[in-house]
Image (tube, rainbow, N blue to C red; front, side):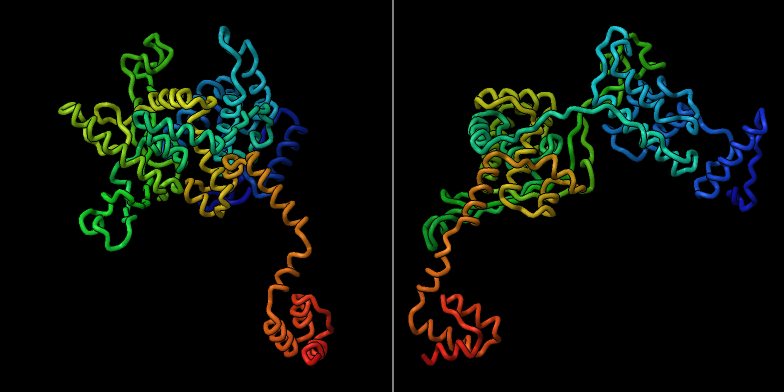
Length: 464
């Protein structure tokens, strides 16, 4: 079968109950050898053993905490109970598809509702990633999860806010505590954790005088004190604020009598924590327009008044958006404030994340190049843009108007431009045409609305 890790020949010995089974097994080994996909020698791992090793020793040190929560839930709650007793080299796509089907049946968990398609898809993605690693390490020749078909998932249609809706939310936010947080969401499109993780040290604003030169304002006041000041700035995204799920501290997990780790007397690992951005692309710098800068400055002044009122209770962590004692805003409270703001503004109900879709769509309407959009939004994969940048009804109408204006433009438009030339200018164009090759001369004469067959014709026209 080739060469082993130590350089010695890799010989496999096959033993079966009949000669036909031996021949079949040998031929399978020969196919693996000839294709270059040879499984490691020894007894194959069970699905349970491999998934447990993968999730705790391979995935845990290399992926984010929120990703691990989903991985562990899929592995321990669904995959191991469903297909864990199979050997990984005997696992078939049909075994996985049967599990996916059972997960959506009413009797999968007695007394509970059938699982949503999204939960089934998470289990499918988890086993696919885990078995891909088994293939890379030669524990498996082919990944059955790449062939298995998960159930169809119905995605909710996301409709970004219109310009009118966005302005109504922004106007309502001006009278709301931490209202600048939602101005930032709609204009810059930061993720929830990124916005809540902002600190004042991440903000840089450059103010300029908006008054006339040599005015008394310029002599007496700083640029940020000018009544007509103008300016812009940048926000550097360095961190994100996450709400982690509490884990059971009892052993075995759940022995405390509570189903959720949050209710366990010895719970651990949960709460609001500061962590790195979602990806390397998430660490970025975004521009802050003047309107957002003004909202943040007004918010800074309001926060200072709250700090003075809280006195010794205030915990100064330099956070831009805080609760009443200076601590970071809890994601749950941020969600409630967003829903209340929508009701106050009289705008349809929407997710907080829909503000990010709105900001991305605005960049599409403005015609910002995709590389710049990816940088501003913190995307590492261009395909993500398709999910976030929506072609709105207003954009469709604007494109239709441009198409109509282009195809049905009046043919006399170019002639009118040519007729604007004086006689001296027209004569100069004819003289230049007489010195050019035929193709260029014809273009110039056509601009004048005249015929001709090249320099000779142009020269003749000039003489005439």
